[in-house]
Image 1: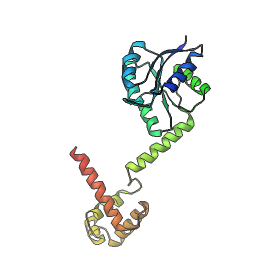
Image 2 (image 1 turned 180 degrees about the horizontal axis):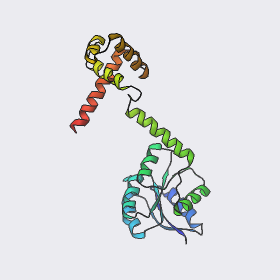
Image 3 (image 1 turned 60 degrees about the horizontal axis):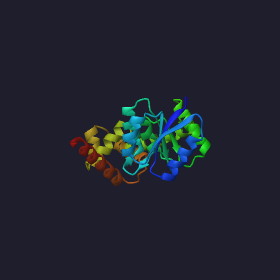
Image 4 (image 1 turned 90 degrees about the vertical axis):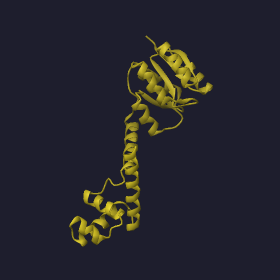
Length: 218
């Protein structure tokens, strides 16, 4: 049996090009086209294709959300995301939405046909290289989300107290430690944060406290 394909892309040239590729293969069948999210939502659930090729960026929305919505209605549907650039954030979003693959618009025709066959057969198109690139991106995003990741619990406490405007002696009294020990903690903390001055740490501590307070009020 042939794999039934539906194409969603707002660029006529690209959409027609994919349609022509599909039409030239005996084991692939083009069953519909759309140029927007609204059109796809109107037709895909009725036609029930095996695979939808979804442009990540569409005039009235994006392919990732469209993928999520279509798969909520048709859990057996396989989605092949199409984009003009290698975007790790879009890739991660697409995977979370249930997409089976992610293909660049610049791929040659044979690669796209092969991708359609693999996705149609229930396979994933996440290559080891792309998976590693995505994991690397995730690690960097996590590092951005937690700038204090390398600090020990003691160093985090010292940073908070610096943010409150305390001197080393005051911090030592609060933590019941020697002032020299606090100086060592401050030096280690600044080195881990790639900072040269205590004032930079105070600014960071204040920003983190304000961000935390803001989240708690939501």
